[in-house]
Length: 122
Image (cartoon, rainbow, N blue to C red):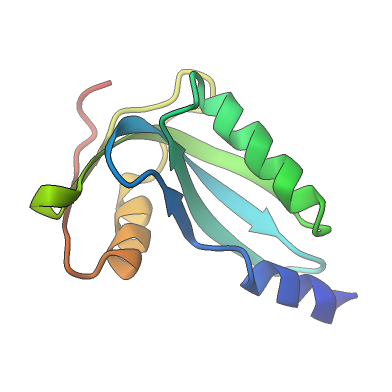
């Protein structure tokens, strides 16, 4: 079971965000069987609340036998024409995500982007 959970965990994309615009995001710790875990970023414009993002992510992961917890949220400003992403803000319900962690994940996914973060702003 641990091997299957590890495989399911490895297939979970580290980053799934909209291609353009300003939108909410959540930082989620995904757990497989045993001690395996990884943090992923989810950000989409359709979400009115951070909880919407987290609930949909949790439902998707549960289908693969994975559990998760929300580590916090914020906002992303994604400007593909400028190759820039700015991470900022917080979630009222979940608190502020560790934007430094989010930034590292985004840099891995968008290596040719300028990615910045700030604790200011909502």
